[in-house]
Amino acid sequence: METEVRTPRPEKVAVVDDVKSRLGAASATFVTEYRGLSVAQIQVLRRALAAAGGEYKVYKNTLVRRAARASGLESLDDLLKGPTGLAFVTGDVSVVAKALKDFARTQPKLVIKGALIGNGLFDAAQTSALADLPSRDVLLAQIAGALAAPMQAFASLLTALPRKFAYGLSALIERRGGVGGTSEPVLDGEPGEEDVGGEPVALAGGVSETAVAPVGAQPAGQPAAADGSGVSGG
Image (cartoon, one colour):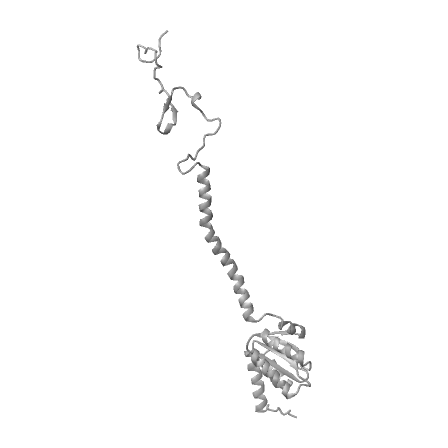
């Protein structure tokens, strides 16, 4: 006996395709249970989420399961129990999470079960923590500030380098006795006038230097040798 295979009705196929498309396009999908909420309250929730960058849709769990399985998101099955509403995020995930959390605070009948971000499934506690994160704009501003601080410090360093170099050069010149001062000070123990024979000779600038007789020169007052050697025979 052959088993008859039923062809899904077109309207159901359309819903499954719609859910698949939204799951693929959304940056995150929040799964909620809305049991006990009135139609008017759900409308308020939809408006709040739309202002935050999300869209709230209600589907039958069986159709969502088909769409999730067709998208490789079987892990979503565990959250599809009871009257389920999905919040698809097209804006900032943390802003939508905060809008859901704020609504659930005033309407406890809305239960936030979890969230699907990429292929990762977040439980209720993790999803609630998303609402406490800074918004994307705030995070970008914090990152920009963190990147700008080292650049400002580096710019200040570049500005200070020439000034510090000038101060250091000026101090070095003063220690060396001015621009015309000697850069090689005379150390104790260097040869002085008493160590080299000859008479001091006055030089320009008042500095004296010892005149040294060349090698082989005859000392004053001593007659030269007959053979020109400069040494008397004896």
